[in-house]
Image (cartoon, rainbow, N blue to C red):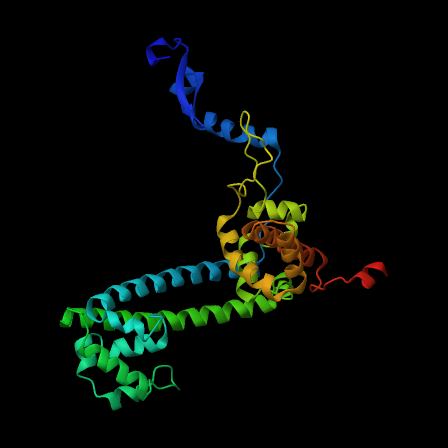
Length: 328
């Protein structure tokens, strides 16, 4: 139906992706009283539960975790910029120094930012370069770098590229110190947090993972059950059914929940299924039943979330219940 065919007393508006109609009086009139009534009506009808404010320790952890994420993003941005300069000036460097975000890489590039600088370096002086306060480059690596620089295909050796490389190395050193400082503060706050300290008793949940959980949800017991906590994270099965397609077909997890927290828990789950005996047994049992690896890992993440909820609810460190203890 075109706009000209709508009745005179209705005005078409787009709501949630579809066309809805509202009285023209509401569309034409906007006052504070009408706006207040529209805001109050959902609360009166739904009666939502009041939100609980987090304590000071939880708020401090949340701010520090967010600050660390911003620092990490800035650090990674500068590493990518440094990769670009190395590709232009001395691309062979990454054959001998694998990671450009290491102290070894920043110490070398800050002193010798281009292949031309490496080619003209004294191997003995390069070998004595200290890169982390206690370790040296060494004669073997120094000889390899000088030899590679003399036959390098890098074409950019000007002072502008050298200046950018030095500044990026200085930024990386500064950001590395700031990250270490913030991570130390996070661990200190976590030791003083009742629930956060207990979460580290679960093998596979380290201080940073526990701090991220506390920063995201506060106290996990604010959810009515462990299943509700897992649903908030988004570790719930999805159902796709349409027409003749059966709902029994395998579907991915539902596209909902806290994606940032779910992404942050992925690596701890990968480590937990290797080191945690009870979670490894659960994972291997699913794999033996024919489940795909990723499906088994998602199920292991849900199992881990249930353990987190249990620790937070009981306010006790995590203990694996054996069959004799369960029978007693």
